[in-house]
Image 1 (cartoon, rainbow, N blue to C red):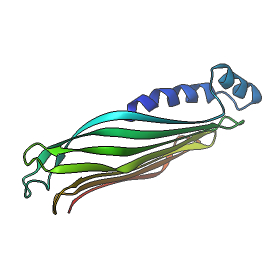
Image 2: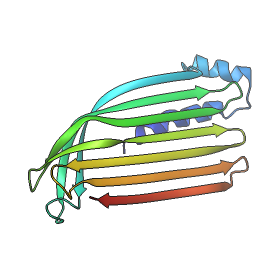
Image 3: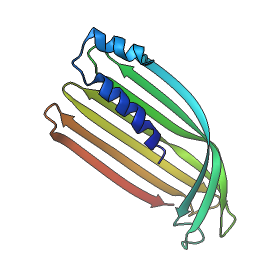
Length: 169
């Protein structure tokens, strides 16, 4: 859900860069208000509801968390029309409580995307480490995902990896 707003700006950039690579391509991007390289930092408030299966002595419970999410966006457009996009999400001060036990929890982790679109293909990589840390023992929940796909210039997928794991400790 948090990645959806990023799809539209990246899609617009890809359409603008889909022409043959050239200096006019760079000027067209500039005319649209896009810099060949930009970095933006934003902090947004978040409210998260998640199920922690190892909470409440293994019975599980819903945990409501709130705080801030720091987001770093980086965009680079080369003179040849290649586009690289990176985003980095990291919770800041995210905390809350279990709805059954009232136990305190903290949300930590990091999510990062790296995407490259060019004339010879594209790569998309996504790593997510989402941790809900509870008070006491045996109620810490971790979700990890590692995703990568490579598509060559002919549109053929040459690499595909999607590993997802969860753990309760």
